[in-house]
Amino acid sequence: MNIIVILFPLALGLGLLGLGAFFWCMRSGQYADLDGAAWRVLQDDDAQAGPRGGVSGSAGNASG
Picture: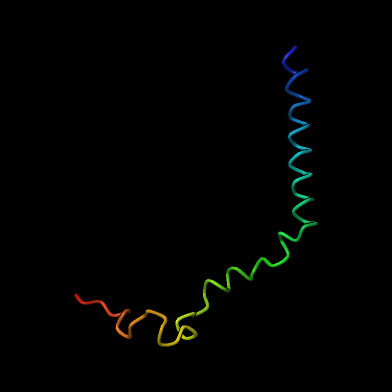
């Protein structure tokens, strides 16, 4: 029964710490652009790289 005296405030403290971290993330703009990173992965950067991009014309072909 004495362990409840230790674990209950510890659980409440960790819960409040997590809630505080969540609200801090919301205020600092961590969740402002959820789709931006997903669309940046899909963009084709090879077309913008030009001739010095380091990508040859046959890079996508399998040789066997």
